Length: 505
Ligand code: TXE
Image 1: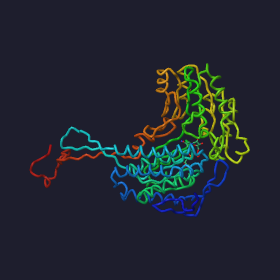
Image 2: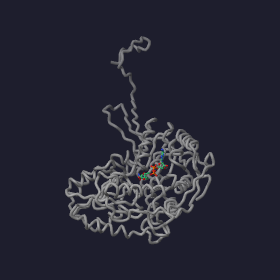
Image 3: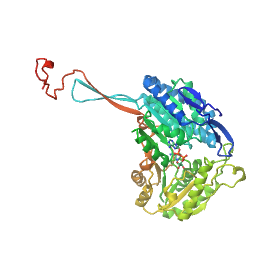
Image 4: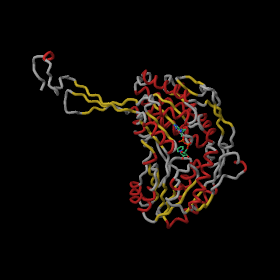
């Protein structure tokens, strides 16, 4: 995908106002995969103006809710139709394996279908105010113009969690994917246009966060910012949005405890712990990066995880044997290397990995070996800070209470897991963990029908589920008096308005 006209503003494909472009290189071998427009601040402002004008014109909000839901179903069908193209584009930008990219596309179609079906159930509510002449109605309306800012790890999936509910609600929006992974968002805009979305409802801005993204969070014409990304950027966006009192929805990652008790199905727990930590090279907000293992089974569990980690086959999108791929960028790889140095300096014990991959066929890519660090404590930065890489830290506990305390000893609160054959104990621990999703005897699955999001510094609001639609809706109360009468609160001293019947009191 290469185009110097890859911004979508007001229904037109346009170049950046200064003609700027950005090259997208594969994280696997640094090969050029795309050249796309790099928006200026002026481009972002034009996209806001287009979204605002379309929203204020009512061109899309005037569609019946059912028609918008059917439109969203149509997008799901088009995603299914183009799944192979989309998976190829996603795999090109991220170097994730095609099999993973295909899973993502199936999840994206399911997300659109979920919100379409949820929208069909949306209804007004009547409130009984105890007075027969009053009709009191609660209605839902689109929140307005939304800035939808996405990350690079699941580029189209994360954007879809925002676009689908925005469409059902009738919002107009500006999508800004990560500057590292623009290709699938471009294709999504093509599908929206093909399906007949009115011009200006969906707009696409590509480019860096400070230049192209920040104006979307500053401008008073934007009503909501929905952001998925890192904590530092999330805090900045929340502070900026506060200046114009925008609504914000933030998904900011996690530091997720995976707790294994001695009475667990150890084989299943180990296998899932390996997947939880190293899937997509740990570039997953819900990655199980903190292993909390009961002391009595520490050696058995950790030795096996280390063996398995050392055998993981790294490789690019076309490597049939590859089990996971590279990190997204050289900058991210350098961050992981620094993170490792700090971990060792803090006293963590390196058991496997800990360095760039050395295989000659991977030398041009951003590959980091699956890594296990033992002897970790919550005082260490490697336990507190999100690495977003293939690094598993190991801590031990000896009581249920200690497991809970350790699992909650983090500023984050996105997800966690508990492994035990004792159902009562597992559910008690699940109830006490302050994280948005808890898996019991499992790790990682999610469904669009269930809410996703974090406690504490993992974010604000929820995506998916029912709540994921509410973020894009304003709630309005309409009170109708069917027999209007004077309020009679203040004494009426005007004789001229006196109808001769005296006071209403
Ligand atoms: O993300 P950023 P980065 C975490 C992970 C990673 C860290 C930093 O720990 O190492 O974040 O990653 C846009 N105004 N996650 O720097 O900066 C940016 O262009 C408006 C967790 O790549 O958060 C991109 O589109 N927008 C995570 C998006 O924000 C701005 C997924 C995310 O970029 C902006 C990814 C600004 N001022 C990383 N600055 C998760 N929660 O799943 C940047 N952006």
